[in-house]
Image 1 (cartoon, rainbow, N blue to C red):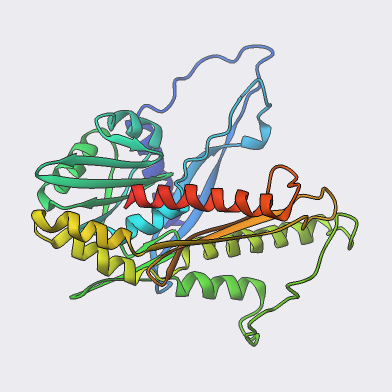
Image 2: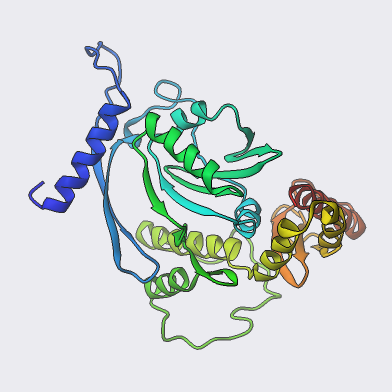
Length: 342
């Protein structure tokens, strides 16, 4: 409260809450669980590590909620990982926005076609994509004027902050030049290694045995402190493997499609779809505890890996052939989805 820049950030958050009418004061009732709130502070940085702004949020203490009384379903506004990769491949005109309270914004944008939290506005004169992630937005539009009108419309209803061209989003660094866009995750990878204390480690092709079979009775349980650290690192690595693939090849080919004359679009579309390929595999009875197999697939766009999965199959396969067919089915479903998205 005594530090000026945090005090200013709190004032901005409070004014935004009041402007949007986010609560109504009512007297407490007996037998009703009162959930108070707290301030959460975060330093927003640019890709080079310099400070972009100080952000303060007033949040409810979720750990004081009781299931069945205070909530029924959890709410997690996320998009499918492949959507992020392909959407970033489609960037024509990019405007980064900050906007508060996604639930009201979703109601405001009912005229847009919804696909998870990726919105599409398609008209003969303009194509616009809006990707919403919690309180951040990526706006992609083929028309600068239309994008500016949408930002102005949002500003009437919300306290919107226009951050200009996209430079850093969810660990993805975006560099603009005359040839287009370059996407990297150098900073995110570096921060993850520093957090794990592995900046000075030597690289190795296979850091662990690929033939080791583990069971639920092997090893010793982690302490609560070690488990938290382990989960944090695993979560960071999972996100990195989801978003890391090099999509410059996809960017080039999609840009060719977007800038081609309309009568040549279908020819280019067919050429793009021919670049898709998928591979699948399964290990039969790979889990020694429940005898289930693990199936996996990898979807490529040209030479670039854009979607993949490796997970235990939900039922026991009676033969290696059956396990393989389940993996092929999952790969086919993912391939069809990527094809429809492109």
